[in-house]
Length: 370
Image (cartoon, rainbow, N blue to C red; front, side, top):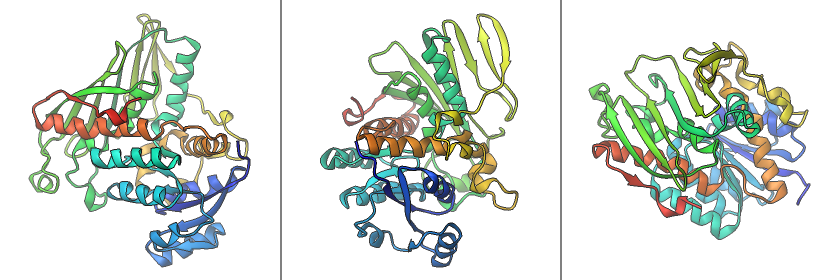
């Protein structure tokens, strides 16, 4: 076990800026460097947070031998290449979702982690949100009884987001709904079957060749009697933003609120009861606990789209940082590690492939399974 602070570099300073003060206050980290292609913006953020090492070139940053780990918050099409470059440069990696956009790239990352012995963690927000931690606590205390079924959804309107999102297959960005249904029972997906439904605007289709407004996938769990269902939409579907999961147990069940900011519901037998979800800052070191309820993007004049639509990701950011740093310090695998991240990510990639083939059952590749 190492108690030395790890020198952290953050790449991508839109959403990524949210993590700067968390690393700065964590005893196991030194917020060492930031990287942003726009030099003016990079220097502005560096000055605002007192960070001296400011890079505009990622490859140059990776040559800095003082950096122990990189936290990648760039557009999704860059995740695989940047993760692989970092691992090959001897850096540990925390990367925002998804791990990659192809099964092949997920495999390359898993193989590189195995070759180098370095740490990789996909920073999936929902599995560290206060809602998930609340249900996880119920499950571990035995309140749910035996889990019988899980369901999750992530419905969102991506109009107005950067152009690379336009026409994206819904399941290609499915980790926010796949993650919680696998993480609660610490399960792995064995195979999937997915159907597409409806149709998006014609001008959105050519970029990815994906016509579906909604994709809904069934997941069979490995070595388990459980299955789950996940639903994803990105365009042309009327629905308030929703990242949700429901868990049905033999004793109690949990259902996510239908309307954001209203109460979720616990069913005991056939009796429903609304429940206030508590915050879980008490699980964190005191110096970063306040970041479960406030951060960089909370001011009315300083809003990031993920916060406007995502309610600050359920207070998950300090929990993610804490897990990554503790895993590095304790020289253990984080959750989710490379194989688990690949399993979660490949569910979505293969689910879309299944939808394009009329719901064909597709098995998860062996490299994603333990």
